[in-house]
Every structure is written in C-alpha cells, then in structure tokens.
Image (cartoon, rainbow, N blue to C red; front, top):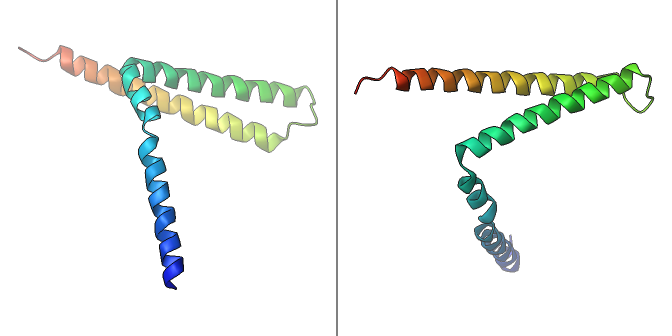
Length: 105
C-alpha cells in the first residue's frame, strides 16, 4: 500500500471516528426513558409484529396476489418468536419481583 493510500485511509477512519463521536444523542434519549419506557416500547413492537402478520395472513386468505405464502410464514414466525421472547422476559421479571419481595430485612 502506498503512502498516499495510507494517508487517505487514515483520514477516512478519523472522519468516521468524529462522526461516531457526534452520534451519542440516540443513546442518551434511550437512557432518559428508563426501564418502564423500554418495556412499553418492546410490548408495542411485539404488538405491531403480530398485527402485521395477521393482516398479511388475512390478505393471503382473501386471495391478494401481492402476498406470497412464504412472506406470511416468515412474518408469523417473527411475531411468534417476538411473543415468546416477551413472555420469557415477563417470566423473568415476575421471578425477580418475587425474589425481591421474599427478601428479609
């Protein structure tokens, strides 16, 4: 690799580093919402996935030519996996709550 190419690569890495340093706003915004806000957002995302999958399944059953069976199946699996993940998170939260409530002072 020639010297000008090395300098160009170095400048590109420095500019990307500067851009990455300036993009801390989304992380700060997520941190301000707290756990309850993140939990609510997760539940809403799961709900949107399920609604989208159900709408696509209904469209396929109605004979919409723009909806393929494989798309319906993939969306249904995404919704199922998201729901199962949400269920497991809920179970862990309930378990942690019970553990905290059973602690003796």
